[in-house]
Length: 325
Image (cartoon, rainbow, N blue to C red; front, side):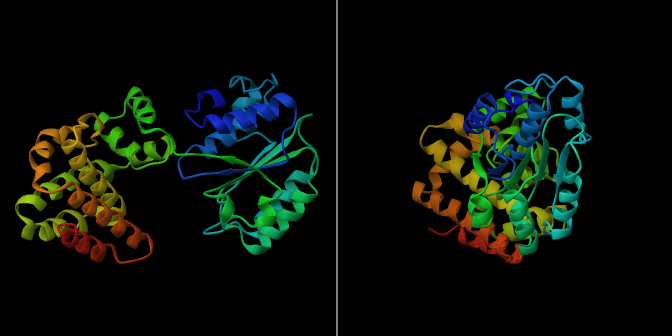
């Protein structure tokens, strides 16, 4: 899609459009930002623009060249993704061979490396030489979560294009307009950095069920705590949700945050808006500080899973610890 159709990321668009308008397109860009924030879509939009037959500040999205980029079969548009867990030197060498041939037209050749932070040392060194002496005209687009995740030598030869998390309200409006379930859309945009990631969440069969389980456990925590561990065992760890405990815990933090919103009169900001009456009734059973503690406990448990703590252990400790404070 053209850059104009990508929501948000106004600074990234401005930097790229300025380069195109002034004819100062860099030979290498680093698109750095959180997963799902639109880096891949912007890379495709930049490739479309640079290869577009109309040669404007943005892609027309309609010409044959734009359509070929969109469908991934343009001969001057190349994509590398990690082979397993890393981008390897053989992939960089194959890319260099592909780019050594003449362009199919008078324009540039463009290549995108996803997961650039995963490059092996050998691959990074091979790419570095390529960046220092690129065949002209070639444009590289490296995609990584942060600038610091790449070698300084690679970073110094690339122009940084920063990507930021999308605005939840804006993303929610777009998703609902696309026909996504409103309750799932509102939940997803508070768990994701951008539209791409939000759409992926909503489309997962387990996502809606995870939301239902959080509501069930959240209510049981206040009334029949001894049974919560059994419910978690039956509803989470004996089901497919066992693979998504990290997301469940992040969703629990939103449940606790809604308690604070209810206490402070910010009902319009609640994620679990369908549970507003129940939350408003029970929010005052604890102090704001206690709810903050519960939020922190949920997020800490999610981080522990990311650090390879066994999910069931992290979940059970969370259920116990979140009642303290």
